[in-house]
Length: 195
Image (cartoon, rainbow, N blue to C red; front, side, top):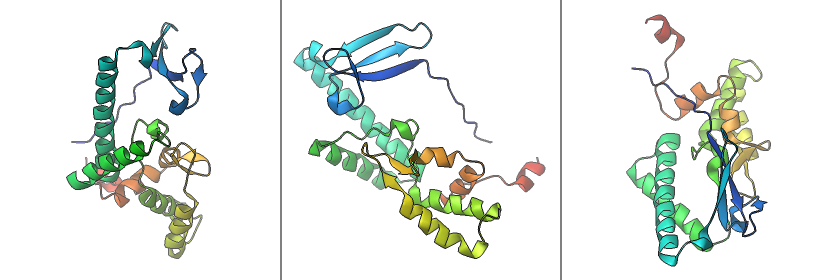
């Protein structure tokens, strides 16, 4: 049975806000959040400091549980990680938070989905071979060149040419090549023709 991916339209927008209710760019500047309904345009501001200490702790525990789940899911679904690697991803993220330097917001990578940079580099090179932009024997060198260009922005998001990796994953032909490099089964045109 084929897997169908559904895309849902966002029903709300979310912003970080400071104590005065002003929208700020980064969680490090935030004291709360604003939830805005896209349908009505109405919003509600929620400030952490308005809650009693016990409620703040509950909220932190809920966030920690959610973040752990997101990390494990991203490792499992985006990188094909097994249980040990999923737990390592959770531990690594917690270690990053414990330093208190920067909160890595992976939402720009597509709802927590993380792209495997090596597999993406190889997929992009494969598409360049397929479209005759490079020769087949140049594929590995091109993949290494692309991989070397991947950087991490100041929010901890991996980028290529200034765009999040998911941007490149969605380019024509790339996702199928990426899935092959991730070891996933991909239906061929022959498979489709046999239906």
